[in-house]
Length: 334
Ligand SMILES: [Zn+2]
Ligand SMILES: [Zn+2]
Image 1 (cartoon, rainbow, N blue to C red):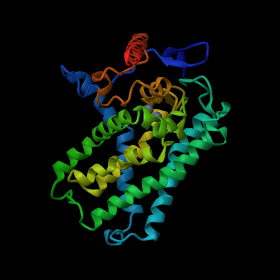
Image 2: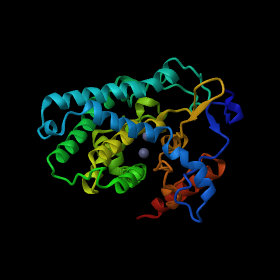
Image 3: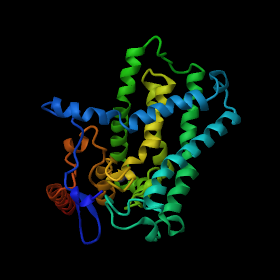
Image 4: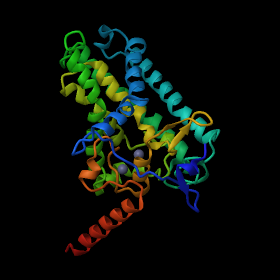
């Protein structure tokens, strides 16, 4: 595909889309019913359906009987941990292999002209972004992911939290399943905003921001505290009356779903003339400029709080004006 039909490339080799990044037409006022209708398939395809189906598959093929999950046994926990690791290795690995190792589409649609593997940095373990990212993902990320999962399943299995069944509450649980991405966006925005506060940023979130030029393995490369806070979105299903399957979906949505924002390419080419949008631009701009786009745009939080950057010249000017104001405020402080 010719990426210059869709965007421009600057002297440094960075590609940017012509169309400014948008937020979903879900919470707009006045409502835009036509835009909403056109956008609706993206709410399900491809990612959300995939993560919901993966939760069903885990329930059916990976998890043991509820009786077994009533006790913390090493057998089923270790098995779950290994399956989670293998699944993540395959899912993230496919993107890494195609786009970064085989470079099957070269730098077409690639936001940053440079390749992380060619830039050594002291910020990373062994000065390598990939090695550092993978160590953090599998060293702390996957144990934390599995620990959260096991805790939730154990609490449900023992009846310590209400377990609504699909037979008795089909409509309520269906609506709750539809709300999973909305719960995610709200949780992510609030957590993300919090860990951008100075001391927490330096202690916790700076680890994730070491990857200024994110690639697939950056997705879950975070400080363990952030990994716990981020994947802990699934705990909402202990507070909201729910079903363990939806808790699993929420967890997979966060864990596997971290990748679209970090893929580094605007479109992933499938054939000569077909491609899938990554929807990565909003979060790519966050990694580039830090203090914009705390959310992923499903709910227009950043528009409401004045921190939205759509990648256009106007967006750039709004960001600069905000920085100037902030600087002036800091200088005026005693
Ligand atoms: Zn990120
Ligand atoms: Zn951030």
